[in-house]
Picture (tube, rainbow, N blue to C red):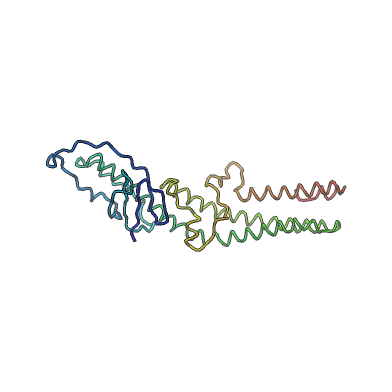
Length: 262
């Protein structure tokens, strides 16, 4: 099925999308015999099928054969800019065509590369959710733990913390890969023609609406920062530990306050 892209149209459920396509002032029409028209078909992208006026004045809809995402990134042939038989307007229209082709290609590439990663991510997210639930369950258990058994509960808590940290690290690793793909697709197509990871996941039968995937630069750790989910988990653990210290101090258990998780 051909893919279409209408300049100036946002993406809709049918895969139509768009960019700004500025109008240019009309120029005087010269006699046909005096203005030879260059054959631009040799410069068209191999997937290009046709271009038609869009729904609104000054807009154009481009039709392409399906992209797999394995093709090279669509770029207008450099030879067209050295071709003296082509006009500025023709080169501009060709540029729009390739801009549209890059958008459709970027979406196909996103589906191609993100699909396996999304399937890989699903069980990793479930493991993280299970680990976080267990951590919170163990911490809540202090409300029902006898004073003489708090140290045993502390051991359970530190075990749960380690499992949660491992799960958070594993998630951030796969989330970073997905964030990079999303960033690359937006960089090529622009925010208006973004293909969201949640959309690709839904096409695969996955619900990624609650997944924690930050912007790609949030995963940069060169300045000593933790990755996003690890950082959020660390904050929660520190809050739990501070609460335990406060309770131990109020209870006058200096030894427990000193040795509670830190």
